[in-house]
Image (cartoon, rainbow, N blue to C red; front, side):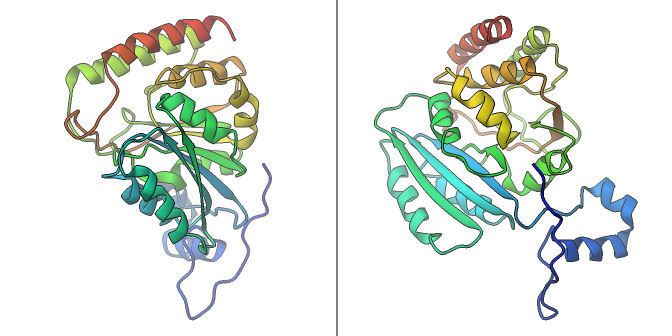
Length: 283
């Protein structure tokens, strides 16, 4: 992925667009180049397009808020909503959102739907197949992950240092809601097992925030088979087998309880273990 830096000059009557060349020059003048590097301030090419794949099933309480947060990021985006057989008002909300953003130059919303609930993996496979952006991001339709962290997540790819970026809930000091001990232990166990089979040193394999160069999705997307939450270890194994450059970035996390709509359960943990072994040993 090669993009020319954004050298455009913003109107003197308006504030510089965040992440543009003129915005960065202001930050560099105020803070210095070293401080900008430490704070993750850099130039995002003006012609870069993000594809955000948002699978959802019965998320009428949070879907609109999540899309609004994604749309607020000042980067060109295609937002791909995949309705995985919802039976609540999620489908209507998705259609309304597409109409609301129809003339927005930064946000193009595309709706896709499954007639039945097949699972997160199936919804992601549908979304991956229609992406056209330079960088592809997975976004859950709840409010557990914060889209404002996109610029940090894509930086290693924009700077051509990484092919894939994982957003880690367990790396660094980003804020996260304190919830279930055994759920956290399960995540760490699955990550450790995945690392053993894939020869990686990830801290959070089960994270939602996985970010890819478009070429990576074109490579592994057609090979994906998992229908439910086994998609996470399958993606990880296929990335590791192809020896893509993987980075991790610390992210914040506001987990929700099962009463608030969390869907993953202990049965999915056993499926994940099977997928780790299956795709860690065979392509």
